[in-house]
Image 1 (cartoon, rainbow, N blue to C red):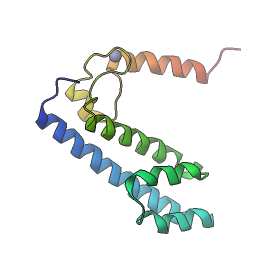
Image 2 (image 1 turned 45 degrees about the vertical axis):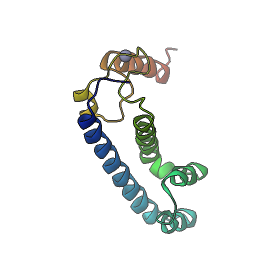
Image 3 (image 1 turned 90 degrees about the horizontal axis):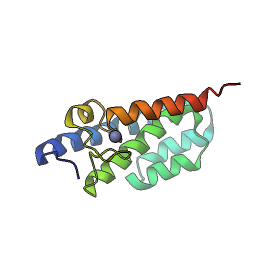
Image 4 (image 1 turned 180 degrees about the horizontal axis):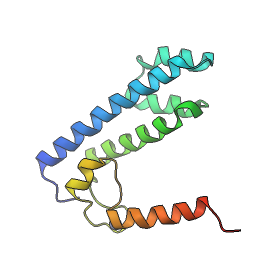
Length: 131
Ligand SMILES: [Zn+2]
């Protein structure tokens, strides 16, 4: 577990929960604008489902219009779960502390800055394979 204080964790948790609701709202209105009937009926059902099945429902659907939001809401969910499990705030690659400032800027961060840069380089490399 990171060396974050209870107060810092509480602030970050609030931030994550706020972002979760924001994303839920975005997804909801995006689905409502869709011309696909499945999306529209999903949008009207979303407010009745619990938080856990919310992401599951989205994953079951072809949701390319909201792919970015679904991806982010999953990350928020993972972070909230890690927070509850007291596994929050450590880099998943090197196990160092991610740091409160970085988490404030990006509460879903799972890597410290060094590892994130390395990760993105690797990822960018995969996206643009040399011929
Ligand atoms: Zn790291």
